[in-house]
Length: 292
Ligand SMILES: CC(C)(COP(=O)(O)OP(=O)(O)OC[C@H]1O[C@@H](n2cnc3c(N)ncnc32)[C@H](O)[C@@H]1OP(=O)(O)O)[C@@H](O)C(=O)NCCC(=O)NCCS
Image 1: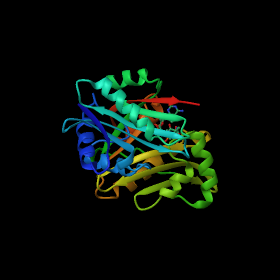
Image 2: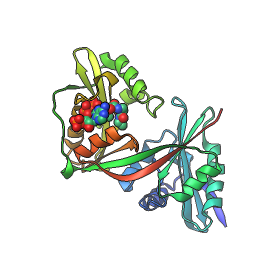
Image 3: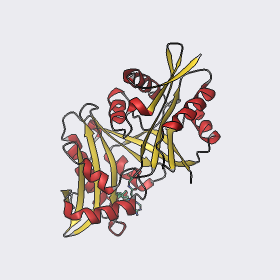
Image 4: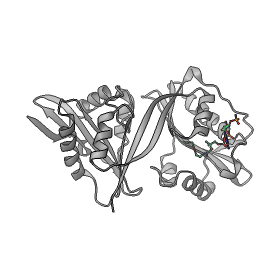
């Protein structure tokens, strides 16, 4: 007999289940991250508290499924964390979890994302059944501290964010990553000891930016965004920004690796990352359903 209940105070069970299943490509879904510290950090960043946004499915006393949602009305998007299912009736259970999780999505959201490892064939079938078209293929790339090769000329002036550049930063961010998961203002509001925005500048002109973060508990850094002005590409600015961003993340002695997610077809960016020592760990599929 399957019982589906809100996560409430069963956070530890949720974490352990997600960490275990997400370590296997056949089950792996996006947004959670990988490993205990990563999963906790991802869940803690959710706008909707995990206690309310996640459902757990039990077969007797055994946890057999997890499905959660996070959403941000400002960017008009919901991120579906799952389904993570370990049960012979994978599809019926995933469908029932999905049916119930939809009730937790705030009103006014028109765009819904699912994200999984390309080996997660059942999620591909689930996405097709529920009308989520394939939206993107992404490579998750990781750089181990010892493999870092800063292949940069360091000829660009790179400075920490200054408010006077905000309007130019917002314009560039929207041009390079239209409709992405953080607005320019949301990025700037997150800045602090562990979240940094670097700008490549030439006089008053903004040529590019790098937004990254590190998490001492997860012992890792993450490059969220790197972009340069189209008119300034191929001059080494991207490489200089990446080197400055990674130097900063590795300046925290806890940082053992730096990760990022990039469109699998973005050959230019992947080539740049590989020169720095990044290797592709997973290829992920993103599905996006849009409703009026
Ligand atoms: C990826 C990006 C940041 C690189 O910025 P850039 O300022 O052009 O970077 P660089 O000049 O340092 O070039 C880095 C490498 O990219 C490659 N490259 C740059 N422009 C290229 C082009 N037009 N054609 C082919 N390769 C190119 C080169 O391999 C170059 O290395 P090299 O020194 O061996 O020539 C930039 O292309 C960009 O903003 N793209 C859109 C956003 C994006 O895709 N971001 C990454 C995903 S998060």
